[in-house]
Length: 310
Image 1 (cartoon, one colour):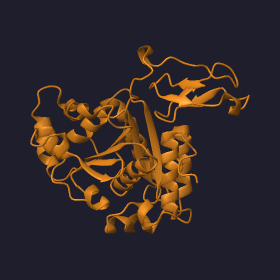
Image 2 (tube, one colour; image 1 turned 90 degrees about the vertical axis):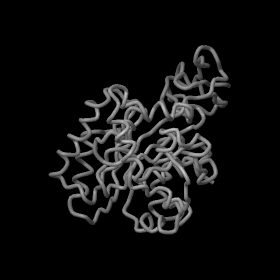
Image 3 (spheres, rainbow, N blue to C red; image 1 turned 180 degrees about the horizontal axis):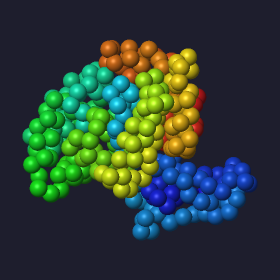
C-alpha cells in the first residue's frame, strides 16, 4: 500500500501486514517527522501537498551551530553529511566558518565557495565541489570576513542573505548541513535564519557541571534570534565515562532537554586522526567507536534504524 507523508509528500510503499497491531505512529524516512496512522495496525493513505503526489520532498536544512570551540562542530558536520551521503541521500555541506577546515578534512581543494556564490563572483556550478558520491561542498574560509561586512552594511534583510543565495538549491538536495562558527556573528545569524533544524554539540569532556548554566543560557538565546525552528538536536560529544563529572553533565543536559538529546559520541582518537589524511571517519576507521556513533546519529536524523545494516 502507498503511504504518503503529510509533512513532506514523500511516498512510501509498505506492507501493512508487517505493522504491529499496537503501532499508531509512523516516522517518515525522508523528513524524519512523525505522523499518525489511521488506527492501530491500519495504514491510512494520506494526501500529499495540494493533492500532488509527485511533488519533490522538501529539503531538510540542519545547522551545526553554537557549540563552543572544541566541542566537535566541524567533525560532526562532516561526519553527519558524509554519513547521510553514504546512506544514499543527496547532501550539501555548507561551511559558514572562517576557519575553512572542511575542505582539508575531506581532502579536496575548492576553487570557489560560499563567499563567491553570495557575491556573484561564481555561479552555482563553479562554487560547488563534489567531494564524494552524493556529497557536495560549499567551502568557507577567511573570505567570510568580507561576507560579514556585506551583511553588516545592509539596512534591512541582512539576516536573510545566505537564505536568498542558497534558495536556488532548495529541493535539489535531500539534506543541507550548515556548519557555523561559535557565537552570534552576522554569518551565524544568517545560518540560523536559513536552516530549519539546529544541532548543537556539547563536549562532555570540557563542559563542567558548573558550566551547564552558560550552555543552557546559550541554548535559550536561540529564541531571541529566531522564535521558531522545526527541531533542536543536542549532541553530547567526547563521552568518556572515566572523566570525573562527565556523567553528571550528561544527566543535566538530559534532564533539561529530554528527547532532544542524541546518543553521545564517544571520545575516539581516530576522529582526530582521520582529517589529517583527508578522510572521513567511515573511510579511515569504519569500525571505530566514532564511526559507529556517527552512523547511529545518521539513523536518528534520517529516522531509519535499518541504514547501514547488512
